[in-house]
Image (cartoon, rainbow, N blue to C red; front, side):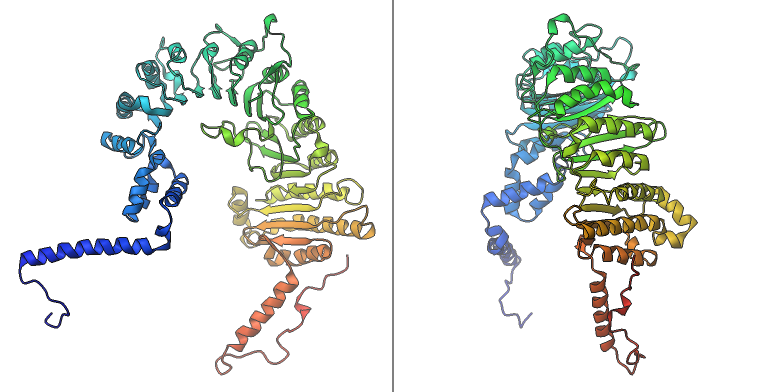
Length: 629
């Protein structure tokens, strides 16, 4: 230390003073360094927006986004100032001590709170009561779930709390059958008589409520909620009056149990409601109905929906096309209105559990619409994403696939099928050959098809059936507008493939179950090529075959030659895409030869035995010369 370029204090007090100074200087240097970093030179408003965007990509109540506060003091101050981010509170998270909740709420400032609680035991009930007792006046959104025996008491206690700021309320009890005899589980009328002046969104499940007291709502979701103002049985007339009471309604979800369950809706309309076609809901952007088919039929006949309203129908008891026919009448009226938006995409979803099939038919506006079947329930806060999209979906439950084909054909007859340009069958792996031959003639404007996603031999058979149906009309004027085929092979994780792999590991590792499909694809490409070459003015080209192959099955030896033959047929007419890029096997092999030459040039001939002159193939002979077909 004698050679140190600085002088050290000789006393403890002097050392302590120097250390304190150095610590302050270190903090100041770090702060100055942060100020010179490009990120921290951004205005505080932009940094705050960055924090907000990041936080909304996480689960806000978990506070995982608060790790940003550890970056520096500036980030900590900015994060603490974002009061809306702190306003989302889950009382059932791992940190639900009273002090934590209180600190959390204090950080939210005066911003309305969004609170979620699940009441399952004494602890969760105590924390919920503690929070409600102190902060109910600040609640903007409240979501309550839990055992029905606990929620029954809380429902009655809600009238004790000041809830003037509450805009959204969601209550969904579980285990309702466990309620003691005589226990009343109903939404208190007093809450709807001025106690909730700001309420605009209400979601109830299994809780009777007075429909006649509902008012000023923008979002309403009722699942098996009997109308307590209607007597023993609620009717369609009561529901129609509800529409009249809620002219500001933007989202409505109604779910009624099928016959034999707790709650029924009677298909009765009294003489005072002769308003067929006169009840309008101009602001309704989303409608989801789950009830008996006759109920849906009557509602759609009496209510005139906006032409671009998003509609999801889940009728009970639709097994055959005959049972669907009465419901198709109001569906046709809605879909064929002069102001109806163009619905150019037909999407099919086929689930076949052991007991009964679940089949969904969906019409969308464009191929870029959000993928996936219409949700059975649109959750709180998700409604704006579904407003006025023009989507129309219908779920049916035929016991046999031929029954679904009949239903689909009847639906297409009323759905302006001549406007459909894209068929998405990626989730319809069980669609059989008969269905394809029935569907395609009804879609004369079809331009692109997304084939069933293939996971197993059975799925491949479905795709083969589709290609054979296409090939049957490839040389006629029918179905020749199709210019794009999308094919997807999922990574082999299904039980069917695992079963196949156990039986024949080598062949299935190479996707041997795809041979018949590729042969069918080649035949279709050949037919389209010939028709286009013979009469290009009548038969347009097949311009794109796009393949997603996660496991690279189609690069294996059993498929290499067939894929090259398909590419040859597409050359000059269109392209083949693999992995999102245009595929050219000739270019691939040319690049492979160049890479091989470069690799050999780097090898030491004294160590490695290199190929003699002429042994290395330098021409295109390694690209398969395909036979003329």
